[in-house]
Every structure is written in C-alpha cells, then in structure tokens.
Amino acid sequence: MNIKVLKVAGDSNINAVVDVALEEIKQNLAVNIDCIGMKAGYQTVKVLISFTERLVKMGYKFYIRPFYVKVDTVTHENDAVAKTAIRWTIIAKKK
Figure: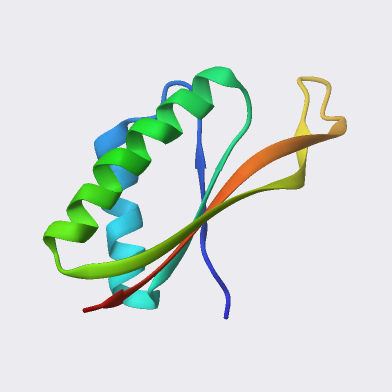
C-alpha cells in the first residue's frame, strides 16, 4: 500500500489540508500527515481535529497513530539536512 504523505507547515491552510486528506481517504482509505516544528505541529492538531470530526460525520471508523520519521529537508544553500518529523497515519473504513 502506497500511502500519500501530506506535509503541513506553520502557515498551511487548514481547510485545504483537510479537503485533500478527505479525498485521499475516499480513494485509498489511508493518509499520512507530516509536520516539523512547533507552528506546524499546532496547525496539524487543528487539521486532525477538523479532519476526524468530518470522518465521523461521514460514517467512517478510523485508526490514527503518531510516530517519528526522519526526513531530508533542503536549506537555502541546497544542502540536505535530516530532521525528525511527526507523522500521523490515519487509516479509515466505512462503518
């Protein structure tokens, strides 16, 4: 199973991320949401609250699990730097 990864930043549009995540759940029944840093983490929490509320209203049961992953980021000098992200994996199915 190839699960799509959505990357959330500190200035991400919450509703846009929720809409994309819902489309991914409808198509593949799974989605990953990644964030790095405090602002992105806060935005991700808001995304997850709205996203899970909508899943419940749409009649989905879901499993959600956070874990750490190493990701490569690019600096302004185009150097690759490994950072630790929080990845939220959501797997859903219709009731």
